[in-house]
Length: 465
Image (cartoon, rainbow, N blue to C red; front, top):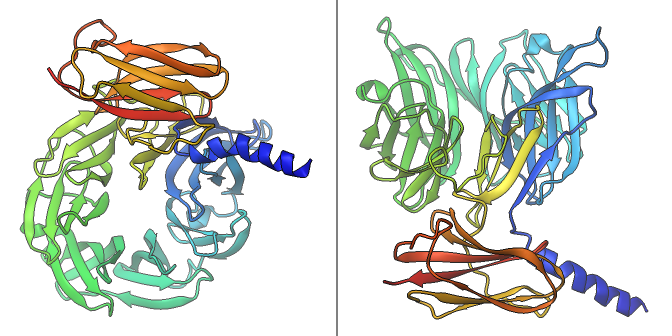
């Protein structure tokens, strides 16, 4: 009996495990109704393949009690809450806990949060372990926090107007700390840092020069011994202006891509200027490498994909229907996953947290899966390439709702071929090469997508005219 039960459990759970890459969409409210108006700072991927969200919200226990509270919510790989933790800001107003600058996960599964004047450590279950709020004696004004692959935590900022980089372990022991008081500047701040790059790290400093009214960014690459290898001052490049939003290092061309709201500066691995693009159409946030020849960035109201060499927009979720924005109005953060999917989060009009997993240009994956265990949904099409029509055959392993749709290479839905209840068995349907408006589509690559309640299969086909 025990063996039979084990077999039944494996048969039921194996398909779900095999298809954990399916897309999902969650609206979550981490606390009770006394907490509302959730705002999001960022989302990060965790060591266990789950995710963590940090932000702040309003709290009203009664008409007399109203506070702003920060929170961290840990979710699993399918978007469900594992734990959530909140802190009152009433006791930390002088420490600017509200003004958070970032957080990172440590090797023990916990999290370190950097606020303007403070560091806070939470364990893997969200319990507070320690805090560092030394504001009275030479306060460290924090600007960013990052971890490297060895678990070292880099925090950047300034002390009394002098740029400082500090590296700590998960228990807040200082591994090393350096300040950078260059002769040609009056004050500055270490604002962004990118560790684990070719046995070194890149840091961006905002600096005020000795010449009155002159300021800019100083981009510095350090080797593993913390020696300066090269530096580049944006004052030498009038096309790149303002603050630094993000740093992207591309293994594809060994270039650094530094962006602010409307400009991108490109340097090679030796700090040599390659190119820059200014006054781009919309403000970019969190510019990240997407494919070998494209970047993706969060913009107001959605996402845009840029050509690597020209930074022309090749895709905009604001102009296309591939990404269903639903009722999200506050896109705040996203992560590109190794399998080509994207995790993103924002807030709904009702003030809840909205998080979903999708490919970055639509709601379905475009990778093929060739494994076909007996209990799995199966899919095939013929002929391939085809013209003018193709037959799609699919096997449904159990009774349930089945959706059969066609997508283009941008992830946009071209046509729904079938959406109804199926019994277990083999089915076929013909696609005549037309879209939902009954208009012939152009030659190219398309994807058949067959989806049941717990499985999904995608196959590539080529229409040749």
